[in-house]
Length: 347
Image 1 (cartoon, rainbow, N blue to C red):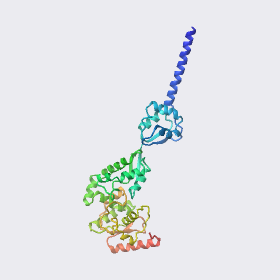
Image 2: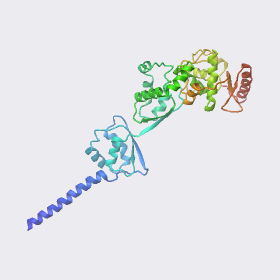
Image 3: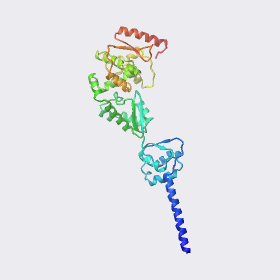
Image 4: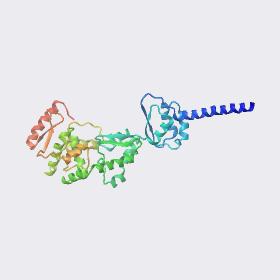
């Protein structure tokens, strides 16, 4: 009888202990383990991160790092870290957190606008993805990449069309560059390619001309008219005489693209540069900026007219006055020069 009681007690103790163990395991896996107030907290796991790196990122977000580590060990996550951006939701348990870190890499929207140089593009992209500026510059200027894709130092800007693109945060520099090339090739569908051919322009020339249009006017609705002026000049074998190309030539000559130049002077027109369209006829050897899609399409779908000149309209800022004759253009130009002088804009 006594032995039976002992066995019963031992059995009860075993059940209690076993239950406690099961409860602890259950709690470690399925009890909420977050301690932040927002609905979701984002973590960025770098490429080649260690489990220690992951714990450091999660430490401020978790009630118990130890329980997280125990479950991570049991689920094999410790030796299978995956880079990326992940969202940890409020109230998640360790099981949910680990499943998220293993399979729910969140895409991000990478955007860039009209950069004048690959270095500036690299800086803009580096602020959005894991790759740093130096690795991006090296990838974008890689000689093998340029040669393979019939690009040069002058046309290296061509494949990068300002827009918003979906990437994973842990995208490498090479992956970014290669994806942009694919997006560029996709952009040039049959319709756009046929329109470029009808203009007797290569894709690179269209981009270079669109870059000038981009710099000439910020008004999207005016871009087809501006493009039409330059196409009329090309057809008549007239030099483009575009001030933005002179400004770009100055910046390139000075190796300083942060310089602000608001007024082109007569002496600037003598600068010996293939980008100086007052001195050299035809389209420059490459784009002076990364043009918007609206500027590219403005070239491909330009307004049909007989204008050959234009100058800023001082009474309708942002827009321009267009002229068919040099005489009329000179009248418009004098109005603009008087306005520049009145504003004391000397450079």
